[in-house]
Structures are given as C-alpha cells and as structure tokens.
Amino acid sequence: MIRILLSALFPGGKAAKLPTLIFHRVLAKPDELFPDEVDVVRFKQICVWLKRWFHVLPLDQAVELLEAGRLPARAVCITFDDGYADNHDLAMPILRALGLPATFFIATAYLNGGRMWNDSVIESIRRCSAPELNLDDLVEGLSLGRYVLGSPQQRRSAIDQVLRQIKYLEPSQRLLLTEKLAERAQVKLPNDLMMSSEQVKAMHAAGMQIGAHTATHPILARLDAQAARLEILSSKQRLEALLQAPVPLFAYPNGQPGLDYTPETAAVVKSLGFHAAVSTAWGAADSRQFDLMQLPRFTPWDRSAWRFLLRMWRNAFRQKVVTV
Image (tube, rainbow, N blue to C red):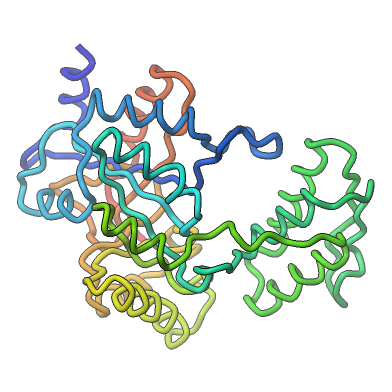
C-alpha cells in the first residue's frame, strides 16, 4: 500500500519527481549537545525504509534518467556533505550492507587532519572546562558575548550564538576567531574528524560516488568571481587527481540560493564541466522543469516511519525549481 501511494507521489517517466536526501555526519552514539544529529541506529533505520519503499539510485544516474524522461517511480538519492571520517567508518558499512549507493561531497582542504571552522567552535565550547567563557574581548571590534557553560543546553546555546555571529564573516577573520576561541577555552582540538585521502579512495573503490564541495567550504556568494572559481576548481582537480576519475557532481557550501551562492556561481560551476550541482533548498526535482545546476535537497532525519513519510510527502510539494 505504501509503495502504491509513493508511486503516485513520486511518479516516473516524463512526470517524474526526484527527491534527494542530505546528511552530514553519522555518529557512533547520540550527542547530548546535538540530539537531532543522526547516529548509526537512526541512519540504519532510515536506510531500511529507503530500501523497502524507494528505488535508491546514484545521483549521476538519476540525473541522466531525469533528463531523458526515464526515471523510475519512487526514485531517491542519498548525499553527504563535507567529508567527515564517520561517513567512511560508520555510514558506508550500513549503505554497503543494504546495497544502497550514495554521493559524498568533499571539502578537500580538510582532508588528512584538517578541521572545519564550525567544528573548531563546537569542540572548543564542548571541551572547555571553565564554568563560564568570556568572548567579549576575543578580538578588537567584535564582541561575541559571555556564556555560562553549566549544562549541555547552555553549551549548545553558546555554540549556536557564536556560529550565527561569525558564519558570514570574511574567511580569514573567521579562522582567526576560531583559533583565538580555542586558546581562550584552553582546549586541544581534534584532528581526526575529517576523512583521509585513503578513506576517500576506499569509498570510491567501494562504489560510492565522490563529488566536489569546494576546498575550504566558503560562502561562495561572499567571494569575488576569481576566488569562487578557484575554490570550486581546486576541489574538482584535487579529487580527480586522487581518484584518477572524473568528478562531475558539485554541492554548494551551505547551499541556500541567493544567500550562499548566486546565479554567477552556478554559471561558474557549469563552465568548469560539472554535469549537475545540488543546493540545500527543499523540494523535489521535476522532470518537466528543473535546473541541473541547482537541484534541491532536504533532510528527513525522522525517528518514526510515518514522520519520515510525511516529510517526504511535504517535500514533494515544495517549490520544484530553485531560482536565484
């Protein structure tokens, strides 16, 4: 019965709709600071639902079938952003056991011991042993506030507030702030959060697709044309050299159209030879009208089957074509 309903919701052929799911991390166990983040138990359950009710396709194959008007009913794609080591260690074994393909978009500057700026913030505040953290005088001209760190909820609130304040700063200033934050918190930050080059190669050898996600994960809309092009191209070139294979898929960092990337950014992505690119705007790509350089994606991280299916249903009726 569920398959019949889903076939009507996500038809194939010339009226096809393609939902694409986005994940970032799969944790070994629930995180008290981020209880909504997906752990292995939840990820396996989601994958079982997908295996039972949908046709999970590699993203490049799904896009080609969508273009040709030959996408099967109930088609869906799985994607991951950033390149966390747990994608290799925890997510891939589940995917392989169930025979499900996925695409992993890698921010190449953080391979082999690197760390994304937001994780520097998160881990600095998570690991800080002081009961209070004063960031008012961290750098001249910018007051980030004072934070009580007595409970997990207070630490999460501090993380959210700091991330929000520095997310759209110029990258070099943002990096300086995260370094000073770690010093102020008196913590040693981890260097094993992201994948190694060998892990990326192992995922590719196992049949998983690898896509580009820029080098340093900047807000592309905030960069000039030359800098944006370099970020996109360098990630593509590094991955192609590593894998000795074409990398035709791209994911915009953060991915909100108009805010995180522009029409000019999408034009650059196309000019560099990518066949398709994904955003983080909700919706399902519609075979009758879609933009290959701005395919929508969404996050169905639900704990129950009916909530998961309800979110899939709601997403199907979101805007079908991303415009910026």
